[in-house]
Length: 68
Image 1 (cartoon, rainbow, N blue to C red):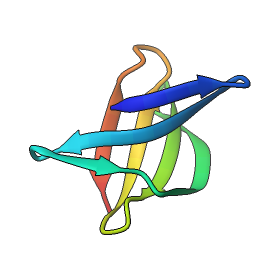
Image 2 (cartoon, one colour; image 1 turned 90 degrees about the vertical axis):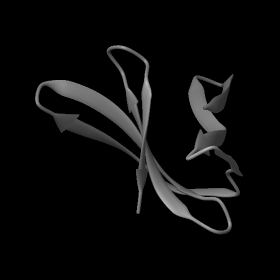
Image 3 (cartoon, one colour; image 1 turned 180 degrees about the vertical axis):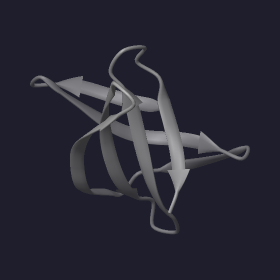
Image 4 (cartoon, one colour; image 1 turned 120 degrees about the vertical axis):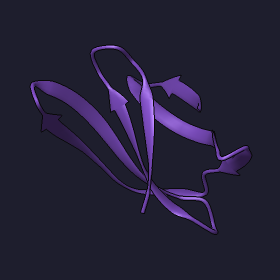
């Protein structure tokens, strides 16, 4: 996962999934999710060939990738 930090925001730039690198072209939706007492910042991303949801766990700062 490659992210940029600026102006108090985290912006995903690219990620690797199944041994392939995906560059993020567009982030149409950013939202927060609470699940099982954990808080996540979620990014719906478009790579130009795949839609995915990236979840950033705000407790351990790890990302999880969900293929949509």
